[in-house]
Image 1 (tube, rainbow, N blue to C red):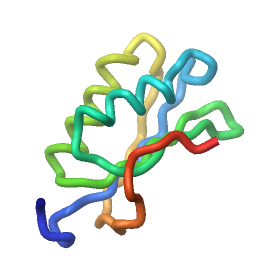
Image 2 (image 1 turned 120 degrees about the vertical axis):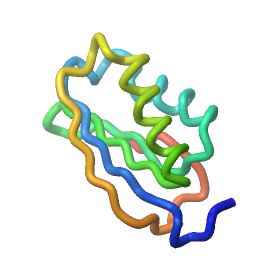
Image 3 (image 1 turned 60 degrees about the vertical axis):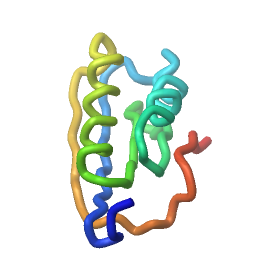
Image 4 (image 1 turned 90 degrees about the vertical axis):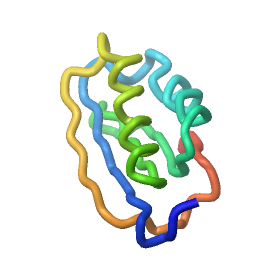
Length: 95
C-alpha cells in the first residue's frame, strides 16, 4: 500500500439523470473492483456526490469507470482532488 502522503482524495459531483436510476448502487459495486475507500450519496439538489480515497491510479480509474458505466445518465461531472484523510474504512452508500 502507498504511504499516506501518496494517497489522494477526489470529491466528484455528478449531474444529470443520476438519482433514481441505481447510480449509487452501481458506484458501490464498481468500488469493489478498485482499492478505494469513501462514499457515494444523493444530494438534495439532484446531484450525486462521490468521495474516493486511495492511490491516484486507483481513484482515477474508479471515477473513469463510473463515467463509462453511467455515461447515458451523466450530463456533467466536476471534481476536486486533495490529500487523503484516511477517515473511511471502506466504500459505502450514505443515506
